[in-house]
Length: 329
Image 1 (spheres, rainbow, N blue to C red):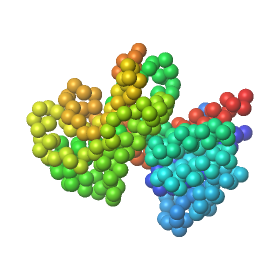
Image 2: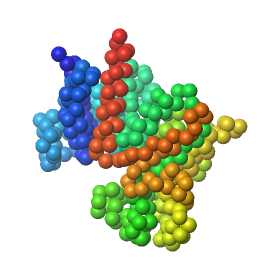
Image 3: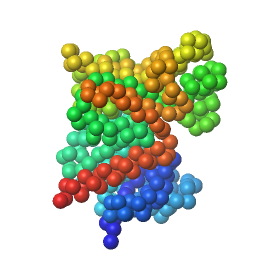
């Protein structure tokens, strides 16, 4: 008999539906590997009457997050609603009720990560948030497992698929920023209000989450606030191309051991063909990690989308179940 793990889902848009699809598709594999069965128990949404994918059981829909976060028949809560205000209240409530939480919410974890982790510890719950960083790329898991002995000296990356797609379109198709942004919106790669992405805020949040995972105190993070890509012109792109270079939106963190600080930078940069980030185009994301023993490691993959995000959520779900089982032994 498989042990049933009852899941409460906050949000059932593209990502939430993807989570349900992946759990259903992997049901047999999960049972064989973990000896458990994931059961979607409750789903909080803003509109219960909205048309949804057939895989979504409408009988499990409810209007308020508290119906999920305080329910006795929910063991683990998955939050994919986005934003910070409602999500923070929901996540903290779930943790205070002893429910472990998995979130894909970058703004939430960048702004309130310390409070959320402390609350989880106080109530014997776990919180995991791999999907809040680079979607399907296992950044936090890699830092948690592989870099136990290696000390990070620096990291660089392309953290926002929307900005990367826009700049790629400007390079490959000769589009202006406005034309490339419109193209990204038509394809669903950019929101109606793209400010978070094109102004660098999204990438900045992701950097803060990574630094949190490395236990870098806020007081030791120095550098300007994020700069986005709105000011990049076709001339900038043309001049870079003439020199066999590309304009990319790059996140950088460099450790200064002597001053005991980390220099942070999020802005467009011109990269030449020898740079590993030069070849990361379209909606792909990447991160280059510099360890004091191993040297440079580059991870590249899809940074957003239903299935990459759902993949990260499911991997976190497995880790939570394994952590709970280890604690009960």
